[in-house]
Amino acid sequence: MILLVASLFALLAGPLLVAAAQRREGLLAGIDALIAVAVVALVCIHILPHAVMHAGPLALLVALVGFALPVLFERSFFGSGESRLARAWTLLALIGLGLHAMVDGAALGVGDTLLGSGVVLHRITLSLLIWRLVRPRFGFGAALALVGVVGGATLLGYAAHGAGLHAHLHVDGLALLQAFVGGSIAHIAIGHARPALRRRSAGLSEQ
Image (cartoon, rainbow, N blue to C red; front, side):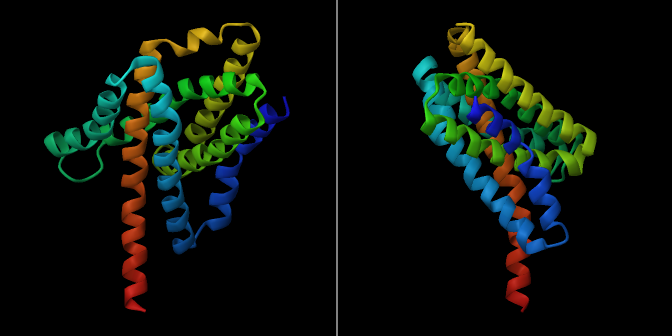
């Protein structure tokens, strides 16, 4: 129960840290780089192994499609600028993480301290990701609502484990969906960090 409460409070880290770093371009670039590294680690270490365990090697192909599809859509139909489709894809991919939050909630119900601590840590990353990607594009209300969705899904997963329903969170279709969302989120996090890091590098080279 303590780790469950900690995972919910960890969702507040995004707004607090981003607010503290506001108007500090270098610090924000560092946060974006940290988000990208943490998200890729989360996908490779946690989401993909879980998906492969339940859906087999097909999960790797689905994750690759999730990673590549956004950029293919952008280049094919909208050029290089950010389109409404790119913004919508970002929002939908993050909402898709709500499904993964249910699995995390069920994991918190197991009572494994190490596993639960990992859930709490990547809740901080997810909160930062939401606040850096959703708030600038869709506003404060949308970002706050998405944080609420993740928190609610975590509670639902925790309750499902307590009710003995956690086995239903590991069906093949859900595992493939998690793989697809994981690939999409990795692409989005890397794509978001790149421009800020380029600006930061350009600023340092001019000094």
